[in-house]
Length: 125
Image (cartoon, rainbow, N blue to C red; front, side, top):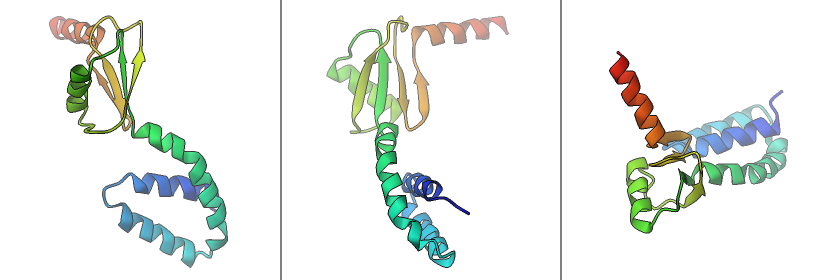
């Protein structure tokens, strides 16, 4: 038996896709066909608890040693293709230079440490 939590997670995942309406309609048809309509109130409650996770997924997280200015943050947004999305800056003492960013599950590592590691591996080939 499928759980209301699983259905809620499926709805959230489908909402992230470009053709979300089509996928959500298929899922709703499945729910009606399998007579799972009684689970919908619980599904809604689970979606409400998953929403903060979803909003964090859609937030650009930038990790630097020092706070970035608006123009620098705009450059990071351009690199990560995050547009006008909300950005949260995090101070990370382990970042010597550059930045790392996380957006929609993708990690962009532009730190000096990563660049040195890549250069080293290229030279050792």
